[in-house]
Image 1 (cartoon, one colour):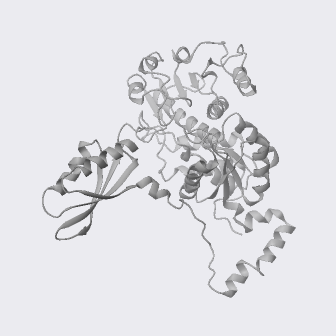
Image 2 (cartoon, one colour):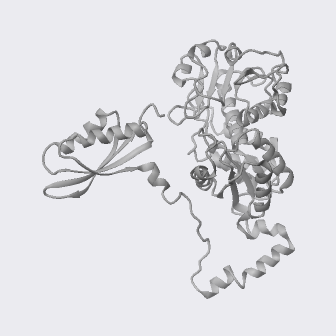
Image 3 (spheres, one colour):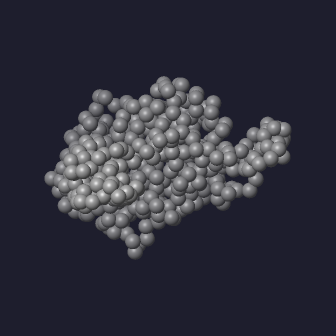
Length: 470
């Protein structure tokens, strides 16, 4: 739930008021008295007797929106005609569409785009399958695949409910990297079925973006697909998060004058995101990390370790700490949370080392209140857009896939992930760097291009951009 009015809960109330009197001036007061924020007030129809007005305002949540409507309805002379939720309006009919890139104005153009002319192109690809990357949408297409088992912070809500999120992901691909992405929502959570389904649809795509698949299923799906396919497979919840965290942490440590190889890190979360963040931190040179899940620190003496937790135990917590998260945070230089809301408080952050860095990334409610953390930590980042230093995966995945597609890469390597993180951190200049600016905005014009170039170079790419010649 939002703590302040948010555009995510923006409504437009169409109402009618008497043309004379005080009703119009009372509308804004009514919204503000209910704790809302008026963002627009438009007269849509004017008459001698009445005015029809659209009042657009931001609320905290759906209950608050209804309270605002009730306040407006209580204004003398007001008649409510319609209340529209602007977020739902944006989603009506879906957020993406397919458009033809070529004109189909006459018989000649139709015969080249489709039969009989298209047969020549199909036969060329049959003779040389690699030509599919030049002559079809494959060279610029990504499948965004989910089973609906771990959607945002909503949990296992299924493939149909996941579709609006996957549409949004596809829209972000297009907006930030000019990549055509296609939502693929699978009505199965069986690993074998997911793997086989993605395998058989893969010929039409240049890359696979796994999305919102719960752990540990996601690890097995990714591993097997990487073995089977000749196109890159990228699980954004793992690797996109890891790239952004490493980039932000690199800059945060620049702010406080510490080195990644020397700091002590407490990491909350041993699922998909936490494991990927850990792997990339270790690859980048981190040495002293303690990982905690809901049972406490992960260490070799625990009897509940599966393969993933066993790997974590083998590569972290060299001293065998067996306590809880609060104990792991005490004296730590860095806290990274990719876990659950409200598991720490300001007093816990106060026990950290001087110049502490706190990344509380659970969304929408972080592991610790950002306001409380900022009282004790030198640098604080969250996954939220209403605080500085938002760590958002859209900083990574569009550029990563742009680079992969341009390079006609077959795999995603750890070196590519490290290159992407370094490029993302470098977008923030020395002049810009500070406690409240360790990671660029998602709308920064240089982000996707810088990440793409780094990935392309790491992949040894043959193409310079997405506009390769046929």
